[in-house]
Image 1 (cartoon, rainbow, N blue to C red):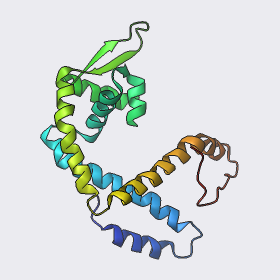
Image 2 (tube, helix red, strand yellow):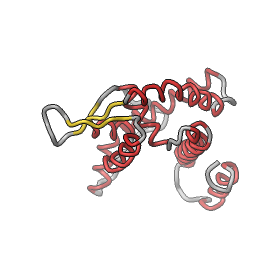
Image 3 (cartoon, one colour):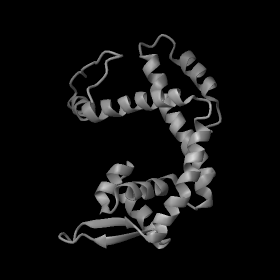
Image 4 (cartoon, rainbow, N blue to C red):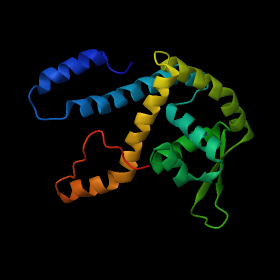
Length: 190
């Protein structure tokens, strides 16, 4: 688990520290727990199933993106993986040196690069993903199948909110304009 303190202890200390500060505690707890859960899952998976394949979380995500979508431009891989183009460059070099991906020049624009899995990369993902998924099942073991689907739906709604309104919100904050407050419980249109 990331950090030295339990999630329960952290939540208690935050409540004690913030006291009467006028903030939205429920939303803070939700976002904080998304971060803590993601960090805990990432650390667990890296230290278990990915360690045996000598892969980092980011390396696995890059392989996953290219495995699912097929050959694509590196800028698209970086975007889908949620990493910077610079980070992808280093990860792709490592994966290429291990024979898992190949980088090729774009057929019509020499400035662009395509990334694809090699046969070895395809075989790696076919053998690794069932092990990865077994760890996903382990992580979610305390939840029923219905709770897993409900959690996935709630998290999907968080992502849709950011995709639909995040840029507008960032522009408002950068311009110093007061942010538009949305009522809790309101579902964004998908």
